[in-house]
Length: 128
Image 1 (cartoon, rainbow, N blue to C red):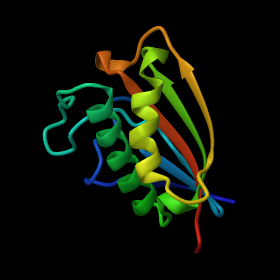
Image 2: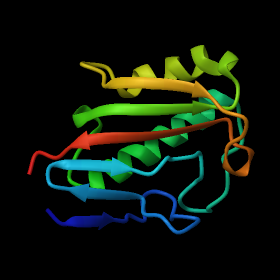
Image 3: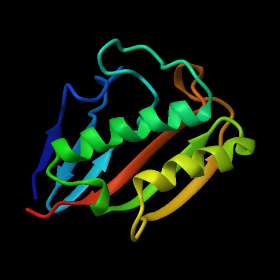
């Protein structure tokens, strides 16, 4: 199987030597998405709820560019700057994954890029 690199202007451009996502067969592996506004490339202002909303909008754009959708996401990993933000993140997350949510891990980390509060990566199936 060949890998295909996925890029979309609807999500923030990679800020290093990585791809927004990689397709391999019927699977899509995304890079971790942080709360960057794709139009400005800057971190959105706001608390973890606002940042989670932007992260999931970015994640949605990436999986859709790869020929998938949030309903096809099978696994996510959530990285939080502070585990005390879990409930607020989870409230927003549940609005994006309303039925048959994916498997998920959530971990607290020492730091995230650009000082953001949340980062989420995913693995999704492609229907084509």
